[in-house]
Length: 208
Image 1 (cartoon, rainbow, N blue to C red):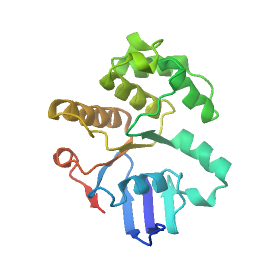
Image 2: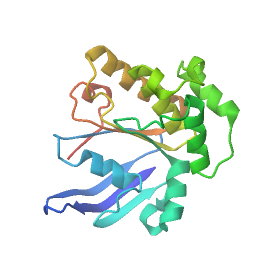
Image 3: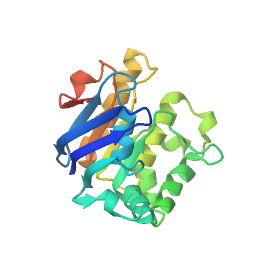
Image 4: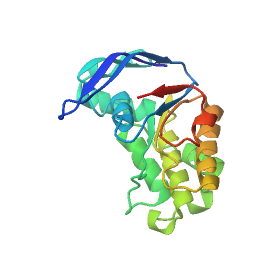
């Protein structure tokens, strides 16, 4: 589903992260682990086409994403990769349903009300479709962020530190939700986290 070959990224302080060879199949699950500052977020940003690596090839669905022009890469990312950021980054001036529709628009896709409604229902937030983000609880915002990441039916779902700052019960729920949604849709799931509570749930781990 995705492959990293001879990937290297050098920071301005000359520190480097490297991945010699990594292949994850469709529907697979991977935990990218390592201490704070080890490059986990950089790994995700390179994988989704936001940050060009210093060297190496990144293939997603057999497409070398950095061989694409920037506009085509943005379109490819919008249609193929869903991202759940640590801070969620929901647009505060838009309702829940509008946040999902913006993701469809940004990917150049037609609005699909049936799909957005089905996603919100599956994540148990259908009753908040016309609610603004500042009116939602933390857990509800997280579900909206996952719905937005899935709305374009991606093949790859990335989550950056999804349990950060959560107590044990809510951390478990967050991981449950990501695994459940990825398995229901046969989506490849990559979680970047240094949280030891995540490790038992996703045995395939790449250490940075």
